[in-house]
Length: 371
Image 1 (cartoon, rainbow, N blue to C red):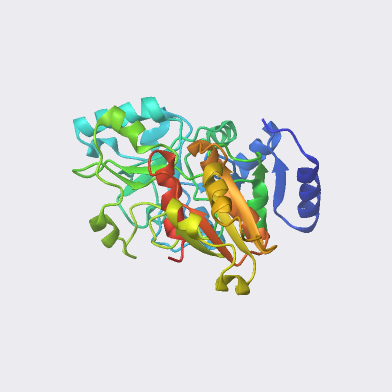
Image 2 (image 1 turned 90 degrees about the horizontal axis):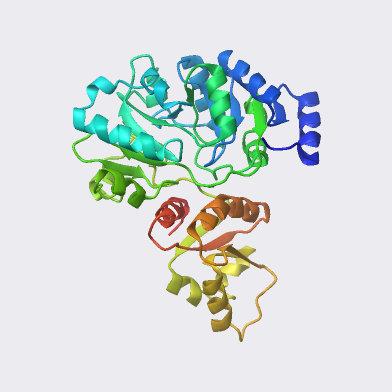
């Protein structure tokens, strides 16, 4: 459990006094309170290992409608269903609609990668309301690897539908303060569990078709999945992207524009960002930020432009000095939130190496970028 902090106490006192919403540090008592709110059809923002989620009873259509309203989320974008034990999976899905071979692969994945940042698209149980799945007959389900999330879901005695706890299309929240800033009093309770460990959303894997494919890269790398069940269809499949429309997305996070900061973001490869000069005509628009994947690239960028003195309007951030993908992923949204709070007008961000978690980082950059 995360210990209480002075900032949490101040925020809690302020919002408990002036609003119906509560902001509480994680404790046994606050988790019990959250479970009761969910049972009563309310909304609870809670930490997971990936990002903070905005939870509602997955079987309560009125509560689910509140999630879409709170986020400003289009109803064609489905929610992810969270469980707290593999044994409860069939509450949310109908495994009888899977072939014997597919069921075997599912159990292999579940035994090895759950709990963890992996959401699996499966045929939904008829008890799951259509609003949760955008009217589709499939649902993405995951078992989060976070003590608070597991206890909250278990105490509810149900499954919890939970997209990221932020306004639709904006930066995902990796701290409770991000939830507060984005959603304000739209949640009945925000549980403050500190910073999330991974900092990127879950990988979404569709195993319902002839070819198993990753719909959204995320916290579980592709190679970890392929080691267990064999080769997957390319997650960047052009036909898949062409079929994304407002008829109902198979997974969250598939829209072309998503995860975007307020500033204009330009995603560049290593060679491109090194060439980007300190002083350009673009700086007339205001502050500029450079977000490097690793310290070596930042140092080379400085060396190339050493004859120029960086203007005061430039902010430089590095996701991982040593180029560690997990560290970079955990800092990704946190850094973008920080830059947004610095009122930068443009962000030049470096793509990560394209393997493992780097693929997930690059997916978020592409969807957030202007170029």
